[in-house]
Image (tube, rainbow, N blue to C red; front, side):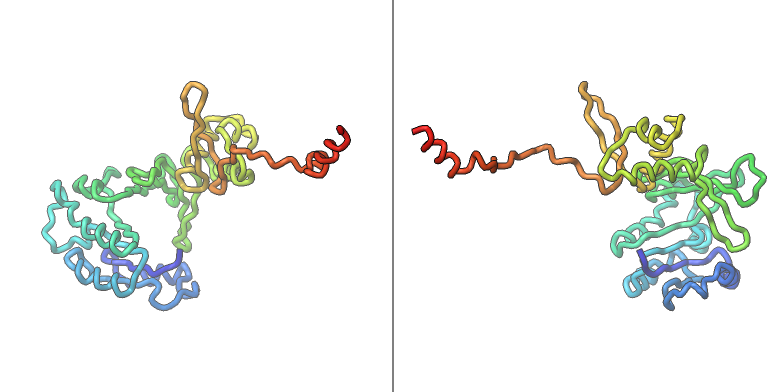
Length: 276
């Protein structure tokens, strides 16, 4: 999907942001002017101005960087149970104008979520990004789904490129990107069939059915494949994985009319004449 983006950048000077964009080659991306806009002075007290902007420009993606910086000057007690109520306005704008809103918020010193839990309660998805535990590579990070109304879960490895501020997905934690690709390809190369995790493991040459099952669940929750259930003889349900293009076979077979030469009306008449 292609559309406009608005970044409410209150956490760092735009000069620093412009420098990073230059490093990643933003000026050479061929984007139309106005595709990405920055609003350095936006605060949550400017919701009316934000709605006016969205109504006019129709961005499909809005970034709030960061929650604390954009709440500055509003006298909001960040630890009270109603602190997260300020997010309701963004939710209403997202629903009304069909756009997505990403809010960045910093972790506390122990790596947990800061401030009131109401911020978590009032959003659809919560993802935590931290440096990988027990790893001395400063560019290896762990992305963890803490809450997801879309059904996403688990921990995933991300590799940061310090030279161009880019990110590379390195697969689910405890598995590899190669294993994930192998499971997905096994399914998508056979679009007319459904498979158990045992069958996928056998087809992909894996001896670890549990690991294959984990990769299939990661792929399903990322939307790379999908699944459905098959009813067993005793009412049990078994999950079967398949490509999005899969369709249930038509089990209502209709017999075609018998059109053999011996059953034509002329043939029947000839049989009667022979009889008499």
